[in-house]
Amino acid sequence: MTTTAQAGATSAPAAGWPAAQMATLPATWTASAVCAQVDPELFFPEIGGSSAVTARRICAACPVRAECLAAALSEEGDCAPSYRHGIRGGLSPRARYALGRRRPAQKGASA
Image (cartoon, rainbow, N blue to C red):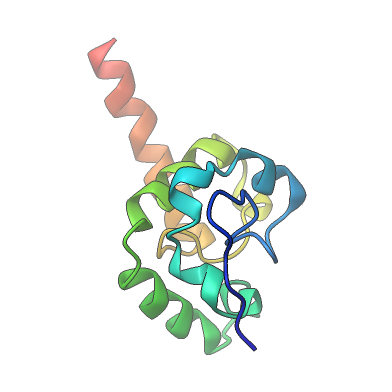
């Protein structure tokens, strides 16, 4: 079953996302998120589950993938990998953790 996002709704792609993350999703890009049109369970695969491949394919075609990834990295900050869940911005929790660990060094260099 697919769902249709309402324009301006902050919960558009967030049917399966944690409440804390839903509150920080800006309506400007979430209304265009492809994940709003599919089952959110795809983005929370079991370890070794095949839905991760499907989720990444969906993310690859999404026009707001960069915004989603930026939001994920911002929300997760320096949290441990065990805090991170789901495929967001096309990346797994482990990949986002690795990317997030590289980003602060780049920010600190320009400060």
